[in-house]
Image 1 (cartoon, rainbow, N blue to C red):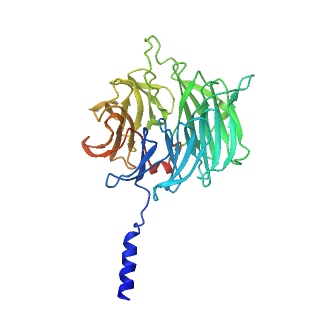
Image 2: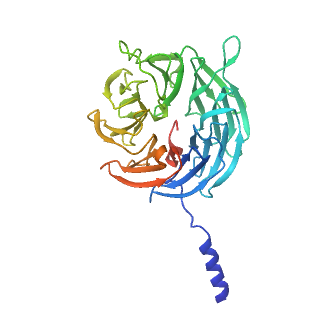
Image 3: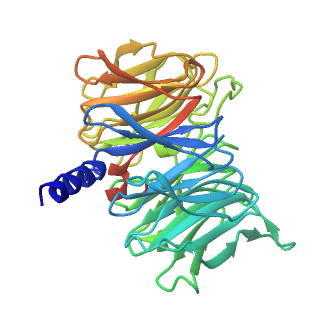
Length: 386
């Protein structure tokens, strides 16, 4: 018995202790086709998962329990990663060029947005079985448009923009094998990305081909697409755009939205009741991500080249920059811990993720990663539009 008990204890010691997923996440290692699984409680890396293909423009969404990460790669790969087992669960190549995706409100469907061929594809979240292929065709010749700004919204619906067509589409996936598509034409010139407000009501698409933003009220879609912030650069010299802003990094804090101005060294403040401009905040460079801390008191901004080694912090009570940091070379992404006490910042050319205390702005940790880009925590599983 004593020997058997000893063997049993030894076997138990080899079995990993059960753990939750609420403090987990992944860091994209874009040059290596892998992700680093991290945990935020002790600020450590737990392991790496290889074989995810081209991650030069990768996005991640999560299963509703936070156990599985769905990684969308630039090569059209859709990979389901088990964070606890630290392995690939399933992987499919679903297109020639993909830039992201999202998961449905009930967690049963994963949808990919594609550049090539233009359109969306709907998959079973458990098996990655293809359920529907919706081409983004437009015009009399039936050309295909690149799809951008895909976001999940309540009712198992998804909303997205067609870059080439200048349209916004809403896909109702109540029956995922027979999607119902509502199309809104004349949304504006070259919508390049999109944002859903935290309550799931409004979809905003930034416009690259003109100064302005397209706004669709999903509670009252019969009103059609409205144009806001039209001609915000009127009378000013157009600047070259070194990197397109990423609008999933747009921020809504209190009654205001903080939006990156295309090519300009400023953030636009928008009143979310009237949808009129409420101010501007001058910045060090062209903003890429404009990320609000979960409580809305701060907005953190990173920049396009040549200012991409800097991060600035805006106090939303004063609406001014209160801190400027230099986290490393080629800052690509920022992600807050679920309650906002820390922010993780990737510095691609320094091969590290730096971790800062958002109250004191002190650096409190660092994780080595090869050419890190996107940082995605499992708290996204419970957020609309992520």
